[in-house]
Amino acid sequence: MQAIESKQKTLQRDLEDAQNEYQTQSNEIAQRIGGKLMQSLDSYAKQNGYAVVIDVSSQQSPVLWAAQSVDITKPVIDAYNVVSGVAAPAAKPATSAPSASTTIPRRTTPPPAAPKPAATSPMTPK
Image (cartoon, rainbow, N blue to C red; front, top):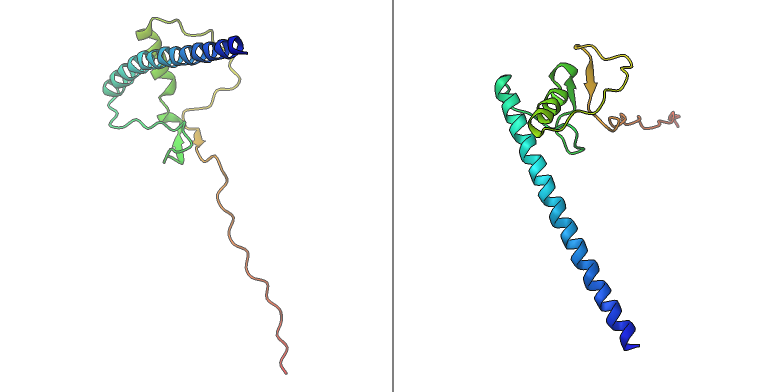
């Protein structure tokens, strides 16, 4: 019984050590990629005269709508790929690309419905 408990404790410690190592390495990788991405984004924004870049991919984004012509996601990813030294993935066949004047709705939930008027019953005079 003691041998089993000892092995369980050892296994638990090994599991915790492995999880901590995984988390540490994951954070280091994310920081390296994030740093390169921010350098690419900073360079792209300065070269193109942007004053603000807003991340609209988050559900918490205050941006409800944006014109397609202001979406710089692809050029920033391309700039990152150049800085990172990683080749861009093979392009997928295009299915009808949106035009520059196309707009992208950013709302993920429908707007609240207007309240229905209260039902009224005809009043009959007494």
